[in-house]
Image (cartoon, rainbow, N blue to C red; front, side):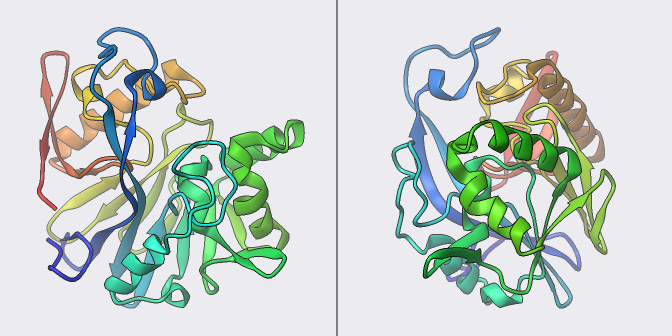
Length: 281
């Protein structure tokens, strides 16, 4: 696990995954996060989510998976708008790295809370926040987001315009396909449903395997109710199917689930759904 001074981390055996928090805690009302349906928790206590990125380090290679909410971005959602936190770069520094040390940034999907630190303000333009990195996303995701932006410049809270398009204009964003290997032990897999090009990242170390799952699952409530989707899922049937398949694979493999919006842990099958066992970070 992480040290007192560094971010939470897990050594998988020759490859380490660390959690870099951008927003450590943010409350969502149940009906602002989860779609109505079987097992919906209904009104009550707010659901607590976290936002940030995962850092994968192996040898001299550093890869980020997702990029949090970001700073200085105009967003209509309270808590995301016009932030000036420096949080994610500070977490990266606590891990002993500078932005220039990051060699790749893989985006599990292009929602605003996963792309915000792609870019930072540089005078009148949005510049890549990680100057040496290639940015990666599945080709299906890039096509879907581009078409949405062409229909509506405010698509995805405006995040395509300030956090994705500047990378395309500078030829820094690559389309990859299912099965793409970012580096030794780090593989991208397509899990469409939440968005058409959503992906997960499988990290295989010598001792353990982890699945960085993006928004395949938003909240622990969905383990017992895997058919319950977020209200942000584009194709809820596909999202539910992908969630069942991936959680089942994680349970069978004894892998560690590393979701975007709550802490990591192991998964087991239980009563037609799943049971989650958190691992303290």
